[in-house]
Image 1 (spheres, one colour):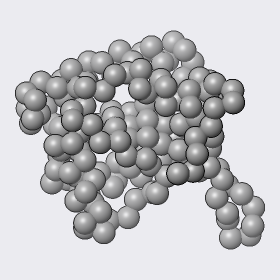
Image 2: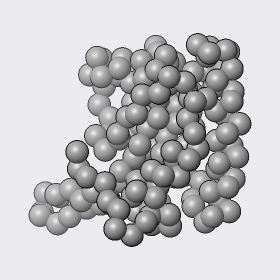
Image 3: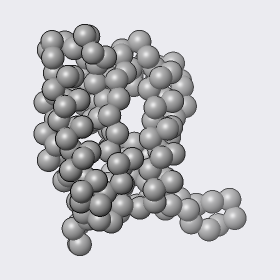
Image 4: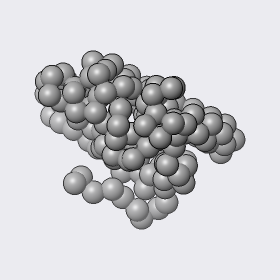
Amino acid sequence: MAELSEEKNGSKIWEPKIVAFLCNWCSYAGADLAGVSRLQYPYNVQVVRVPCSGRINPLYIVKALQHGVDGVLVSGCHPGDCHYISGNLVARRKFALLKNFMTHLGIEPGRVQFSWVSASEGGRFAALIEKVVKDVRALGPSDKLVKKGLYLSNA
């Protein structure tokens, strides 16, 4: 489930596990630019590259939360810049509905976040990741949807 990391005095502190679904054409390229530019951002984000943010099934997000992920980020192209014309607008509608549904289930809205990042915005990507990690860390470990006995490996 959640990750524990060593603090300087030897005590354990909780670190959230976050999955980021990134559009191949913009957000993933922005993440790549952040890496190439050697921008620092938290290590506890697992990136999943997808062809388009509009192709992400909301069930993937629910499943991630069931398997012990503490937060999910979905990031796509800015409106008007989608490689597939309207995929990012489809994604925006899907995830607005999903966030409302999650609220009805008692899941905090900050656990699932949606953003736009272009290929040239490496700095914006790094800042976004820091914000998501900070927001999820403030919410604490997610346990509402977690299926008992299922844990993510540290791989």
